[in-house]
Length: 415
Image (tube, rainbow, N blue to C red; front, side, top):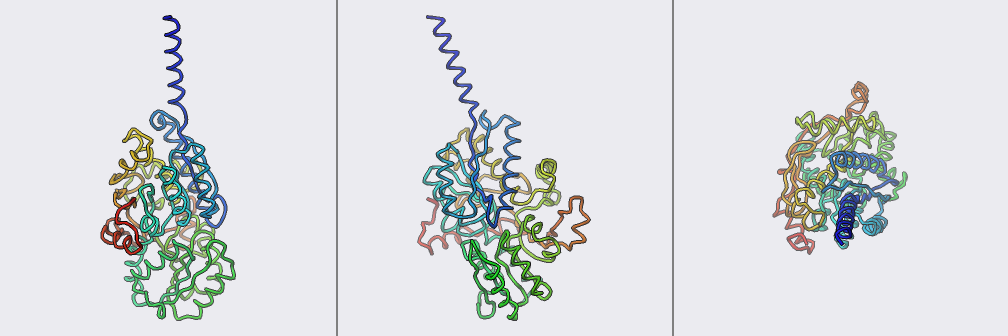
């Protein structure tokens, strides 16, 4: 009897150890194909590096992490199906994406499955605004935060100029345009016209038609509310039409990958915003950020982009919340994240409690001339940071957020 009891106890102990060592699955919903695929590659690299580092230090709650990924192709309906597949596979949280339409649709489905969704590149105001909910957290800044920082710089450096907007026709594009119009005082569409182009699936002829109208206008500032390969394609036509010779080109959200695809010669002088660049840790004295830049460079032979940094930060922040709450339960993690302040790859950031927006500094950047870029060790020093706005001043206030929610028929608190 004693031998049986000892055997059962040993078996129970071994079973417990096996269960404790069972990997925790994180679900990665990202664009491996489509217009935003380069941003997806960068996110994948950042996520894998974070998981490698966490596993080397014992994992999370004594268990290793594993990544399960599916391609969204930046299509909301596909992203929603992916959520179900990843949830059925046992993912305990979901993250990723480079399209706000994807993040919003996938986040709503994740909520139905009881899972947190962390948006990486999802700049639409709607993500944490009218479409925000308790299970959605946005790591990057919103369109309004970009517009407020960009508006300050453009109003100072280009006062009284006429604008022309070419905008991707979906939630990120429309909220980015409306936000920038407000912060630059260019709401009058007669004085500052604009055109929409389809997303996804815009053709070169769509960009050419819109940009020819921009060329025929009296505009001095051309705002391309486009992203990824869409912006790259449009910039080729901008150059062909010579618009970059007589207009200041503005792209509200820039990334390292976009400049690499188009080339610094084509992108020279373009102004936009970034939530992070690999120069920021040195600029702000972030030792953890410097370590990330070095580790990423050694792993992949290139500097990390804001896309990579976002995915890396999400995995690290989720792991930190799990450790602090000693739980993988979504409700416990929400409580651990709400209001949490931290410094990881730059200065202080906060997961704001009332809307789950990550409040952080926004950087206005200008693409350097090619000859300056070529002087760098890896020829990836693309951006001059020409203005910086603290997150507390960039993000909408509680009153502004609640007013937007009420205006769209949403309750004044996250549900």
